[in-house]
Length: 326
Image 1 (cartoon, rainbow, N blue to C red):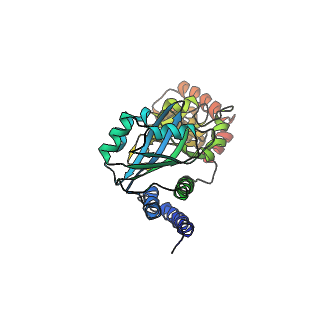
Image 2 (cartoon, helix red, strand yellow):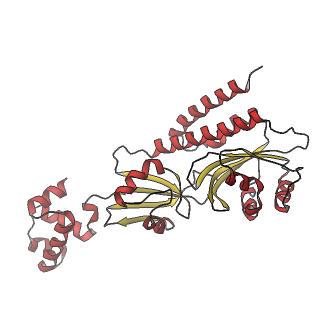
């Protein structure tokens, strides 16, 4: 008979192989694939997994997916989140698998309604423990038949280990997909309140060079302010561009936001008209010639030239030409 230890070892091997495949196949849902691998080990009928934020006495789930459950499960859970006994226990005792039984003495009306609505009889939840962090990855697994046995201690330990490995595989896949290599870029996945769920480890040094003194898992205030507005935002003084868009990879029901930050070159700091002027001057045009080509006054070109020099940190035509060519 195959032991659970050897089965778990094979699960980890298959998980990391799938993580490598996910580097090339963006359509592969690594978490869903992992839970299908885990299902025979733990004998669950359905599952819910995703990204949560614990803050004070409140749990929010900004991105999640279900396995064998209706899509309405997560929205319904959000209406009774404050009465979820499992979420309360996870907040209180991070790193411990928490369980619930429909027949247990301690109940809340909301837990009973959730269980009856979705046919859940037994429930086990685990999260990856990130000390000091407000965000986490979680997995909840469910059994739906009254006669199903309780998960034993070995099962619960296996679930916790599987969630830890799954989080690390998801994180590694994200980092490999977003790796730039130049050090001039960073990618983060954050929630609407500005708390980072993925990418923070790689992006911390990048962010600190732009916003010295910043720390923690919540974005600097200027980034939080633009995160809710899709599109490209320029921080000219800080020398960085930020592309904001909704992230659909973290779960089928997701309000998470992907931020792609890149350092601006000095030329990026010029306005479109200043860039035209710089190109002409670097090519040898005089102020008068540039004015004629652009339909402007020579005095205007001279003023724009001074602004260009200031932004590029140059003092001569030769330095300007070198900067433009570079």
